[in-house]
Image 1 (spheres, rainbow, N blue to C red):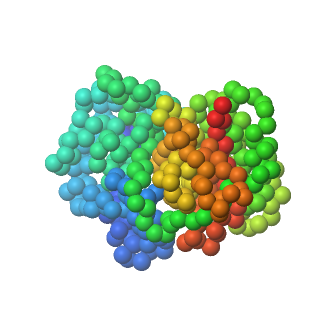
Image 2: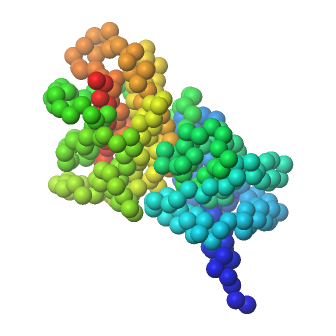
Image 3: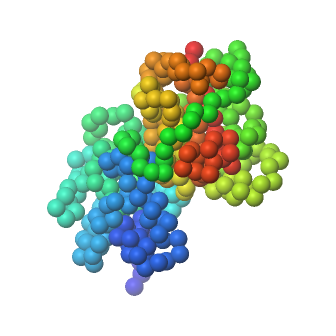
Length: 368
């Protein structure tokens, strides 16, 4: 029997769906190589907030043949309503894992779908199918600024491209091992360099470090959104892969190869957001993510596909340098965010300071 192009696209999309949480739990229990680590990684996502731990909701995945059949039937029913061009764009987004620029998938905003006992908006349903099987509610996701539906409260058509949304981190009480550690501030020489008069149109400056050595120039950012990556299809932004590095460390080279799609840094109305586009966790320290009266800061782990508001301007302006002798000999700035790729640091790690991490970023915000 001849297959139409539409049916081939639908089949390819269904085969490209995200693996179910229940399957991961069974694999971990069976002792498959790497399965336990994957399950543990999903159980500790960026602080343990509600809707922030994919591993906890594994039972909500394709737990039975009946649930699998129901999800397949519903997904096929939705996909068959799409035009061929829309199917091609959705497949491109799914197979590139968000690495390629793909158009919005605009569908009626009120077209909800029922799965089991729950009704899901189409954007949430497609995110469940292709990215996060444990996703429950639209409040758990954040629309990216590249999307046409970004910032629109009640549009008639809403974008359902699953890679135009990210999972939202909610910070509450971080579980071990993401514990508190002494502040490690910028060196005075670096602070003086970054405060020299220059182009005031930029809203931040980004420095890339490998352990204690800065690699490449300071990258000044004028556009509202910046991609920072090592290797990204159709990438446009700060490409770390093009920087010349003399570091021969095997660990640095290994971590550098895992940066991949990297992160997306976006200045929005309520602050600066970081979206983890890579396939590995990132770790973030920011003064505005914690209690301003705290003597120490938390290092937050952000899982792939998640977004976190890494910097809040209002909080930063209200921050005061701690009036403690421990800090009097070091420069204080509330306008800096540090981000490490793959490897974390802090009291519960062998690396106490970010300067020991193989590959990391320093983002300094313009407060003028």
